[in-house]
Length: 422
Ligand code: UD1
Image 1 (cartoon, rainbow, N blue to C red):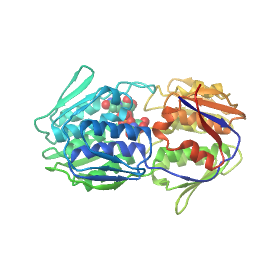
Image 2 (cartoon, protein in one colour; image 1 turned 60 degrees about the vertical axis):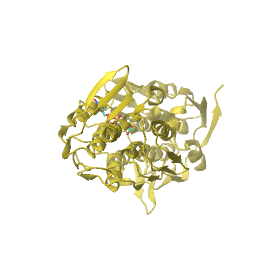
Image 3 (cartoon, rainbow, N blue to C red; image 1 turned 90 degrees about the vertical axis):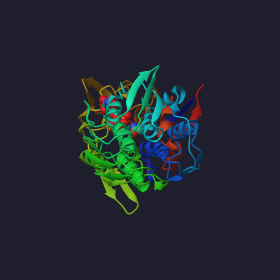
Image 4 (tube, protein in one colour; image 1 turned 180 degrees about the vertical axis):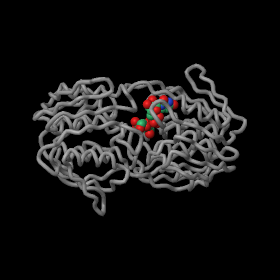
């Protein structure tokens, strides 16, 4: 297993190219199951999760060609409808093949994705939505087994205890594109990745209105055809590099960043004394003042502050001048990074769903363990500002979601290298 070794303390300066969005790419790839025609997806990020999704599609019998920045789904039908445990267990987003398989093949067997280190990850909303469209769904031998003679449009309320669900919205929207009649999803996720998926589906011939709002209307069509689409920029990668710039006291120009997807993050960073300027090519990010001010942040569904940025903002607040509070409202157990950050000298304690962070003048490098994708990013960010050497172990999590992170950081001045773990 690889590890990252970081010598902290240098301000990052220069330009970083923002990659295509992982969370948009995965459901869009699975949407290729809705047609037998050729599809082309451009601006794909080179990530482990993208490879995993292409493995699932190939396993199902779809002929795929994975290029450096593009994927071609070749024309031709596929026969398999089972997504096996071995692949699904490595990536929760595999669940988004369920809706397309059901719509196209009228049957699907997808391994139950289970929980993960950020807490329980139920799929009741996916099942509820697909049942409302007429599917019969059972859990058998660790698999979700779904069948439907036909799918029928319906009015579906998809809100859960923690608000809307991104991938349940994706699954139900994709299934509804080939249902008879009209479906309306109430309390739909408004995340930009859902809008990107809707745009791809519309290019394939789907009739969808209201995406980017909590009420999405889908008029079912008989079939969908091939299409070409360019994946949106990754807003979480963008947010992570914004914090890399601010935490090191540097100045980064994030090429291809889309500021409209990041209003909550920009607002919080401005409160923390950071300067974010929109440029012709992206975003320029640096500190406005020497000291960072503490902030109070709660994660919320989009357009609120993203849970996928919670760990990273916590790293920034570790070196702010005062006491910050970060409250997690989407995944209440998503706090494993706290103990690792405290190993680096931060002062964070957990009070229910809130982390209280007393900023310190300096973090110090340490050996730390990455527990999930965004927690790993938070540890890298802390390592960039810490005094001395930080070793981040188990970085396979990072490779799931950050394209060439050590190359991108080295190019702007970080002392970071990947080495094989002993
Ligand atoms: C997606 C993102 C993930 C992000 C999350 C929340 C992808 C590939 N992943 O995950 O990076 O952290 O959105 O923004 O896009 N819930 C239920 N029942 C369900 C489904 C979800 O109760 O059937 C709950 C979850 O436990 C959580 C909340 O709803 O509390 C939101 O989760 P959800 O939006 O579904 O997350 P994902 O779509 O899996």
